[in-house]
Image (cartoon, rainbow, N blue to C red; front, side):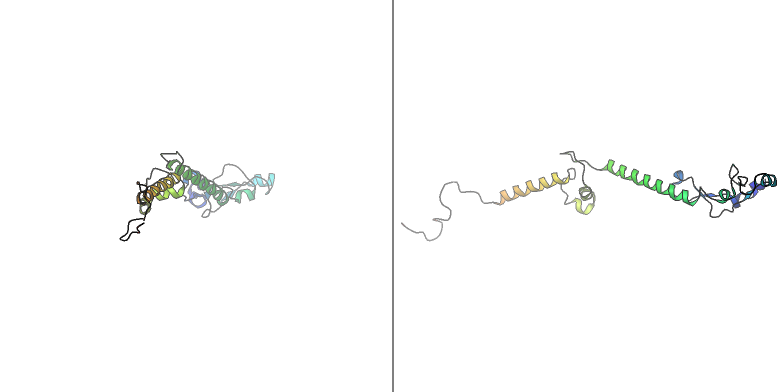
Length: 173
């Protein structure tokens, strides 16, 4: 009855964290350690033996172990780092699963190309958004070659020398 009445004073609390299911450590920062033993156990085993029982724990411990918080801050930092690394790994795997694949060559887009086709300002200049960077570079080179070929003057067909006999004055032979 006394143990239940004083529970809010000595009981640890859960850490407030994003990874609630991964953290089993307890926050003892506001808890007062309440330990007890019997005189019979002290007389029989001495104060240095495992005769101390901390409220909220199941078994007797030595005095230093009963006052220690093995499932406190150190465990919390370890569990938080592990949960954070797992979360980062899972996010990276999900991102890779969403990465687009080129419809021509089948390779995955690079980060730069993926950003180019998804960011609204550059998507206009990105060309075909379903092809990767090298395939897009091939398209650009092909378009540039076609543009240059269309802009070049046609070759003369009749075999006459270009530039001869085309002026206002001609040389007579």
